[in-house]
Length: 329
Ligand SMILES: Cc1cc2nc3c(=O)[nH]c(=O)nc-3n(C[C@H](O)[C@H](O)[C@H](O)COP(=O)(O)OP(=O)(O)OC[C@H]3O[C@@H](n4cnc5c(N)ncnc54)[C@H](O)[C@@H]3O)c2cc1C
Image (cartoon, rainbow, N blue to C red):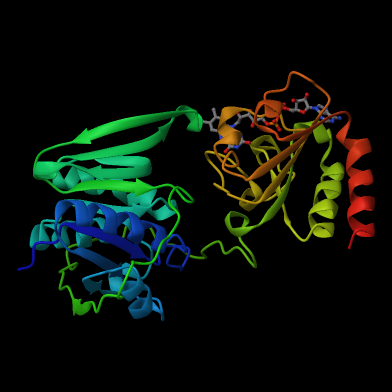
């Protein structure tokens, strides 16, 4: 039996993909495992990505492990919790690091309950101290505040890492040569309680990866005006985003929502049109290199974050920007 200090766990989940932020979690896992003086393991639940060996090598992974079982194919949280609980019973990892995805939200807290340990969501950093104590920094109160949790004891701790919280870095020096093994689990006792009939699938580029985002808010006044946001995004070669009220009111698809309960983005340029700058929205775009805002209210909170601000009506300014962007192409 191997004792794994830090395990980064990824799976295809109901959306059918290994999260692209896996390398960020592996980078953080490497830092923690090195501080603990132990190995970094990467556990893939279900089908592994094609490039798993290369990713593992450049991230300094010591052991690449896999759990495969038919019951894990349907995105059932019960099966994942059971599989992970059995894995932890076999390996006793000090830290289990997940990317915070839709599936992780279903699994992390329940797994912590099974293990009698703790789960920290919205994680942005983990530091390991002598003796194995972990200090986990997490975003709280809509992303406005950082909270530090100290996790002591010997049980396996669970941390879910926010997207874009860590920049993936390859290992310095020679790449590792990870061992590869299958982990046996018995899921025969897991009953099917939920069946995913048709997983939602987003087509094309993801907002989280966009270099330029033009986002619209309630200041657009009506759903028809959202096309101005889409047109400017297209003219700049970027993607269109939105604040949550536009999603709640059915103007746009939820895949466009930026913020705490939407996408966490890190573009080079974020143009916010008719968005007030509520903390829950800023949690999803404050890491942009440059924020430009258009708002009729000179005291709008968004101007505190913006490098460039235009006080004015976005319904007049957006068409001007679209024209200028098209001329500049
Ligand atoms: C638990 C929780 C989670 C949340 N998660 C999110 C999230 O993920 N993402 C998110 O966006 N929100 C989220 N919210 C909601 C958030 O608190 C705000 O209510 C929301 O972001 C406001 O959206 P808005 O800026 O479009 O609208 P408003 O706050 O109504 O702001 C509209 C802005 O447009 C300006 N304006 C009006 N007319 C014009 C015009 N013609 N031209 C230019 N400007 C104009 C106004 O001055 C105002 O500043 C969450 C809230 C909670 C409680």
